Image (cartoon, rainbow, N blue to C red):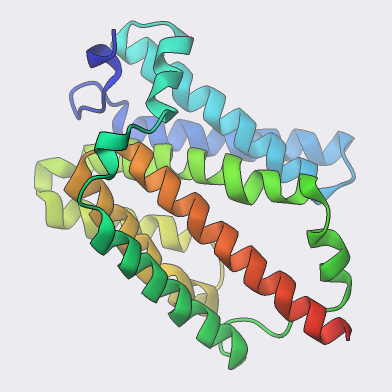
Length: 220
């Protein structure tokens, strides 16, 4: 059973799957905005919807149960072997992003009210757990697999660029492009999406902690 749900371009829903997942998230966001007045929960609703749709596509493609498809999200210790260089590269990309933040090139200093928002444990659920899962399934999973026909280098560059472009405006794109390239390289080197999910989660956690510290300084 475990072999049936390991990542493989032949079993991946490909770019069509990526578009379906992103479309489901947009639809879920529109619906959620009509019934939920908190952005945190709207974003979480989008991510949960995207994760469910992505796993359903995998289960349907590989002819396994939804629970079996969900095993793709379980990291294995063996997957992390030899990823020390990737970890250091991600750390360097975080230093790069935070330097841009501190210089005001990427984003302005966070307002004092951000501190209170970040103190809510519910706020952290989406950027640390849910968003990394759905984004990596979409970009380093489905999209990456569909691009492999043109070679690993193309898959790394294009999947990273697409993942970067969906994140927002130009300064933000400049700030996160290095980390997105590293995540795509991690997928190419390990062939495991779980590694990308883990590093993405750790990266987002570090950024949020840094922003929380910055907002604390501003508040004082």
